[in-house]
Length: 561
Image 1: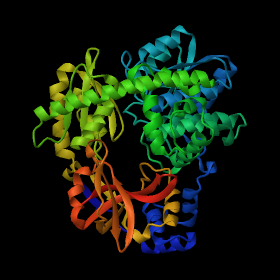
Image 2: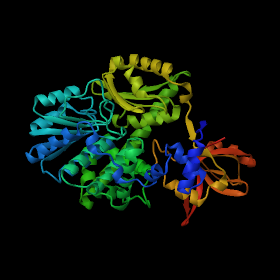
Image 3: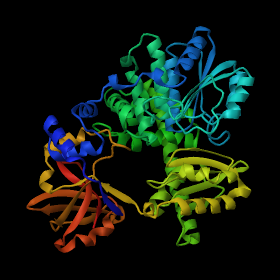
Image 4: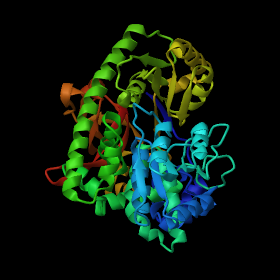
């Protein structure tokens, strides 16, 4: 692990924030590090308001999108809501279709089959629309690169509205409206919406035209918050507002499908982290193991018993996903162990029978293990398909772009992407990818980094400090859980390894007569560093430990040295 301490913020700003907010300098420093420099900015940060959402009509083509949908509704046209099969796509389809169904009965939903159709807009989906007299398709979380397919749909008299957040290619599809804040000529103030977030802006635009207020749309925000968490977009600006209110909906008035999924989960209040690790994998499992429409059906279902039945099915898919994920990860690790060279900058593996639905998860696990830009390939029809994952600070999308001579199709983000290529191109691509990464990556990025916000002493960790810290949530990219560091710690003498295979480290640390409990998941192998009361330093986050009905603060260790 590479420990890096964030530079100190401007002292004048920190002092002014501490005085105006009546908080200590530690809190003011954390705010300033996050670009919050004034009382008003702090107020917006701690008290997110729906009034701070941007006018949807600032987004390029929003007027065209709203006008075309209104025309379709008033003319009784058949509308199809089309979305990708992952969490962002399925929540987007649930969001858009359930809203439109309050205005029209002529609404169909479509999720492409991961195996037969692959990612994004498909010819099969367009044919389905043509066969069913559908004249307008609203594509969510996909479509920004579907130039040929949208031209084909147009030739059949089918209009497209695209709501996407992926990076556009050189050519923008000839759709009625393309809503994507990442377009160069789109002046929308916030660029980091997920696909479901762009979909929400469209229903906000429709609501504005129909004299509905933002409060009428609050029940849809549980879907938006889930997509924000699952798609790992920054939880800053508009996303922070949407996630904040979406979590309130999940915890206070969840839709029936969420209630069914959570019926077996004993949790007081779900955080974004819980959404990512409890809800998102289950929603994803449908598209990975069976079909994404199963997830949409659960998310829009209003009868609790029916939702429980759907949730039970999805639980089975999730169990199957876990088994496939574990066995493929084991096989991939064995393949890497047998073939890896010492000075490799990338991890690229392939096996034709690996389950296409879980290669993204496997790529993430391999990245955690070897900390290299990673690609996991499998056979998909006559081609090879891969999921790419990257390390912090390295843009894998740009690296793939530099290998485009060997790739048939690719898309995605800085840290996660997907691609297809012809089998005969595999070896040449693999070689080129290694070459591109090895010549462009900063070598220090190949060592995992712990970014530490500031040094603390144990006496600084008070209940009041933690109460304010909790108000920094929801946490995520752009607003990560604060990480602290303390030097000169000793174990009280009772530190031990716990858990399966004694993988975890449990201890109580002390300094200056202050003692606080600590848990280090995956740090069991570092137990020797704390024995005999030898001093060590720790990087950690702060959370609450509940035991026998009483709560106490504890350190969640990220690393010790």
